[in-house]
Image 1 (cartoon, one colour):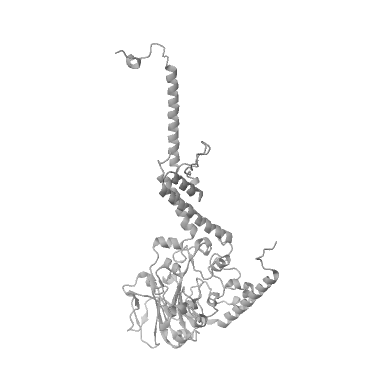
Image 2 (tube, rainbow over the protein chains, first blue to last red):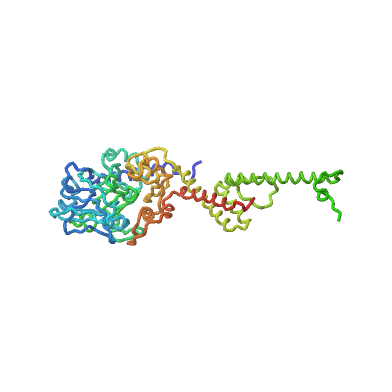
Amino acid sequence: MRRLSEPNPEEREAAAAARAEATRQVLDDMRRLAQPALTLIEAERPGFSKLGGEPDLPPDVEWPRAEGRSLAFLAQLDLQEVRSAGGPDWLPREGKLWAFNDDDGYGSADHLRVLHAASDAATVRHAFPDDLGKRHRFGEQRVGFRLDMVAPSLDWLGVDPRALDISRLNESELAAAPQGPHRGERQHRIGGYPSEIQDERMPFTAEMLARGLSLDGPLPLDIEEAAREWRLLLQIDSDPALGMNFGDAGRLYVFIKEKHARAGDFSKTVSNWQTY
Amino acid sequence: MATSGSYARGDKARSVPDADADAYEAMARKQRALNEKQAADIEARHKQRMLGGRLFTEVGQKPWDGRVDHPGALESMIPVWGSGKEAIADFQDGDYLGAAGNAALAVSDLVPAKAVSGAILKGAVIKAAGPHVWRTKPWEEAKGVRQWLTEKGVAKPGQPVHHWVPWLEQKSAVPDWIKNQPIFLKPMKDAVQHGRVHGRYTVDGVKLPRYNPAERVWHGSPDWAKATPVSVAGRVVPDKDKKGRRP
């Protein structure tokens, strides 16, 4: 005997049609929103850009600190190198960026601090400060860039995969794409979309943190619209080869609004962290 | 004064038949039998202590008088039943503290039972079929473990899931098919709880400290993992406490 809660054939057909429509919309969104992204790989011709080691900062810039402690140096990037490798067009064509992390500050918007200077700014090697612990002194690797096209994840789009017809996703051209946010390699990245470890709609998180709102609180009415402005500036993965470990093999993410990036204003970035 | 008996004889054998000899012999046999039984009982109790306590209580030796005996060593290992019976027996003995502890233990037995039975009902204790990677592309029909947990109803969409087994390759060579098994994963209340297992975490501008080691174990371990040692320890310790209290 059929239970009352079981859908009848007509209801099942309607549900399948709804799932097919939702899937079509998601595929359209993924295609439309796919962005160029640079994966940081070992440099063939070493330039300014690198992960870890000691930073080359302008002489008048002091090593960033928080609560009296020196922060861990993560990376420095030459935006000329980034743009010439096909990096996101919302990044300035020139300038230099440095990223420092405070692993005591996870959960706050600025645990990852980004410094910015003009391309022609002179730089000098800054030695590790004495108070910087060994586990915060990362190995150095000069990096080059590989251009990928990255589609947003279902988390980024806020889609529950249970509402989709996976067989239709599987037939899409995205299925054959060699690049994507779910590769198994070390995922140091500029632009595109984040590779999430945990389920989280990161553009919402970025917007809430930027406004100083509690993540447990109600979502602002304009959150969907506002969240569209956020771009992934940088993603740094845990990297055993360099001694980087964020939580337990976690990842660091830095987001910036497109208008701020285009204006060269890197003072309004928002950082996030996820781990296993 | 005239005396009689062995004192008077200077322990010399009687020279005349003793009218009480049979009665004395009967009494002596009875006493020897009683002594042997007591010695056997003492020996048996000693051996049982060496084995870790009494085994199952003997049944049918006497009519039930309404009292509940303490469980034997094996019986006490039965979840809920063992601790529950111990709690009742302690209460009858006036050991109210022990009764409360064992009652709590019996309740704790229900935690892993509930957790495991719930997971079993969902078919989500072991992910036998691959892939065992954490996440897969959304268009792949064979789901990674995180997506699979959502499908099975073990973790909600958006809920952080903590890896009980450390993930990082530089510390551990634990393969995916082990560290990503559902029995080694702990769905967390929220990102704050997950964050504080790993380190300090800031909430609304307030920097919260990292959980202490006990809290990390409590919040970061699957229910079955944290309840099992409590249950086992809870059974071992009271048995030692009871030594000599009851025959």
